[in-house]
Length: 282
Length: 294
Image (cartoon, rainbow over all chains, first blue to last red; front, side):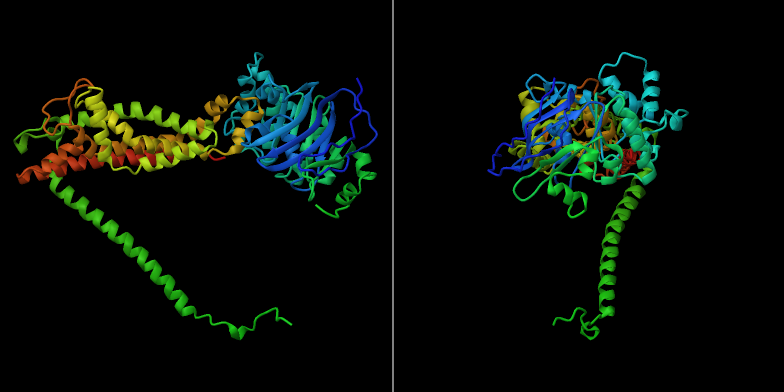
């Protein structure tokens, strides 16, 4: 099934009408997640305005933009982590394999099993490496072999060789980069379809960052990855698609441009994307 | 044109005066702590000097008596131990559950805020008020009489706010990133609380409960109000028996005219202080041992 994304911007509640999103000419069939006219408020503050885009399956999509542009809000809307924040209000739809995760009868707990998340600061549990991997599996009623699962998840996260002799060591005893890969392994262990990454390398040194980026390219074979990053070079290095978000005086958190990373980076269609990429603001 | 750098001649550093102020401040601090420590040392020395001579096995294993030489604290020790056990049996689950609910479940609302403020206030209510409440509700209302159970329930009410507040503080100290990690792996709220928040907050919760228990052991007023006995020549065998506790025994002995009983009271104070210091020290040690780093 092929649907073209509507470029028609709808008027917002506050009266401001965002300039229409520039979509590069690309047809995304079978998106794993499709966002339709998504708006998010925290209390009275608007964080996202009428965002529509499709996340292609088994690709890496980067969300870029200056601080406060709504990219983290968009990311956290994709697995309903925003639900945990008091006073949040969400309009629009997020279709995961065609089903709106915000519709009645969808349990956010099940959504989060299918859409995993890796955070900005590595946050392993203060438990053994093994327990870190197994927690998600156990609470979700995993019936397979634990040892196999631990090894597979750690291998996929390129951490196995470094920790295989000491799986009972605390996750906190690892280096920052290893901790982040442990968090990735932990996310993989519950067999998600999508992995959301919120600036996963911002707390890491350049070498650890490169390792995570290599790992992301590996993982993109089996998973869809959506990454928020402040780092243009990183977005250019790892991502297949790029979405540029922006907040300005009138519109908070609008999607300015979306398309294949190369096209967006080398041939931006919106003046504001170009300004951001060339470092004129943000 | 405005001069960017003010001329050096405009400053009056007066370093001597500034230094002097600092020195005076330190002196005030040292004096304050000396007064506190000296008083404590004097008190301890006095109690030890008067009581140590009476402190022997006979003293610990005998019942109270009209004769100082035969009097002991057996009944009070049993009463204190039993009361502490029943107090904590009631207060610990109630207090911890209330703290968990307030921190992890209760939605932000005016009601929650009101409850929060009131719990903090309850911790400051004079203990004799709790005694009156216990007398009306447990002793008379529920017909428990002047029993261990009535005393324990009263004490449980008294220490509940302490337990609730320390539980909340311990839970708040668990970083939000841990909760995020748990939720992002598809955990329910209960699974997050049960597998992560509670275990990581455990050392703090434990410490709060030990401190609450030690407060319950030291309290006297509410038990006098509900009518715990002063002269008890027996060990309470069931929670519905009448009883006495160490502070009440001490209170009783010090109000007797014979000087020997005042020294006996000093000996009982040594025992009570020993128990309290042990509890508080264990709270500190446990907290150090079990503390996790995130």
